Length: 159
Image (tube, rainbow, N blue to C red; front, side, top):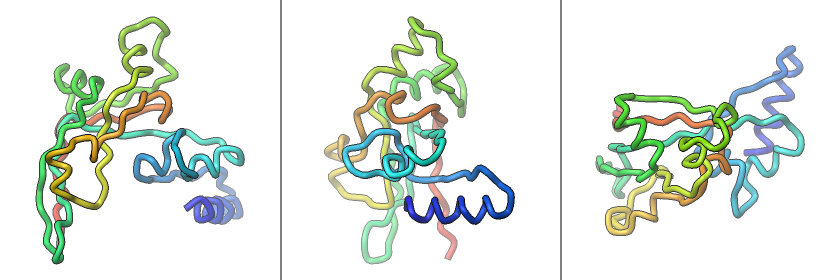
């Protein structure tokens, strides 16, 4: 992925563009990871601003085997996502650099919390072992900002 990003940026620079927008799954773009994530490989070469996403509740359309799909409901247990929902927002964006030191929201953004990390797979373990679809990290360690969604809807598969 890192090689692809560098190649795309070079093509855009030839066209006079000095920035590109990359969309990727959580740990691929996060600013921290226990493996060589795309961010680790690119952060020394490029200016990089990472926007994470999380949900309070999500209904996902996931593959279940035999080319069948299942719609399952999951909760992140992220305090910031729950606060966003309780405040009545359907969606909100928090730029962590704008949070004032010493405020409650800054403390929550800096604290370890659960965040959903569902991918394109489903296992019954997701139901019985919630850590299988959650990561436990401080949002500010992983991202520069985050978009929170109260209730995410499943993707409709069109065949």
